[in-house]
Figure 1 (tube, rainbow, N blue to C red):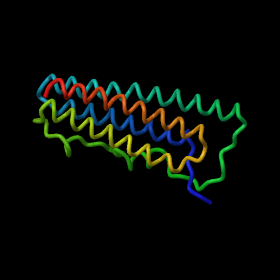
Figure 2: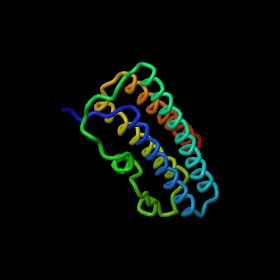
Figure 3: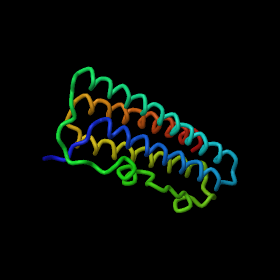
Length: 163
């Protein structure tokens, strides 16, 4: 039996990662003395919050599509829960910005860190696609990746404006 995941499970993981991102950016905002950087970090937390809802809706849509198609999940080894899988990812289970941020970073530094986090999430989701055999689920993961890529583009544009 191969280790397989469904798109539904990947979306559960994605929601947990986004929740961890919200915590990370909010805590980081509290570390910054510069109001413009703190505002930027709060905005990043808000983006992650919006993603939680987007991914929840995608998960519901995917479940409905599977139901409509009469598809039953294949036999597979039970994967660790979404929280554990999300802990292997970008922000970890207990994100602690004090380990990555001192509070003295420039706006450009914060943007670079955010870009790095978003790119890491793209790599993570791309890797998870290898464990998802059904095409409908793989397309859903591509949608998640596209959402993360939007954030990278916005962050890169913001960085270009200040450097």
